[in-house]
Length: 191
View (cartoon, rainbow, N blue to C red):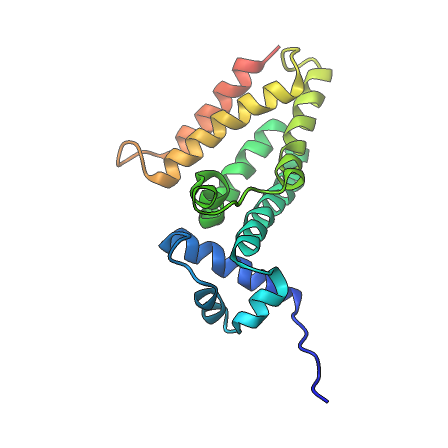
């Protein structure tokens, strides 16, 4: 009697990482499950067993990205809004393929692939909590915390997206620009 094949969590994580890189490089339409399996050194049956089909795999990649992003933000929460802002950029620079897949819209245009509502919403919790804490301490203007959090997220997201797309002056010091923007955001919302 043959032993059942056990697919480990490390294989699952490898398939998610490989898929993000391949889709980022080649686009979702050109990546096949066979490509993913070969790049991860496994079989297509392992991919089907762990995820189902291509759409489910792509959704899992995006959800995993949002979970990873959330974990990074939660780890930086003790640093307040500035710590979260710094962690945002560092995470994006370290996970460029995931960042582009999560926020670029390429997957949604190709297949019905949206992040799970819980995964996307959870990613904002550390920022919303930091805004609420700063408001309670009297350091930020009183306004709905979710609105302020979305406004701040949009500002840092825009700068990081420009940096990753290499849009801007060729000699831009992105770290300095980003630091100045974080300072301006803090001053703009200060109570």
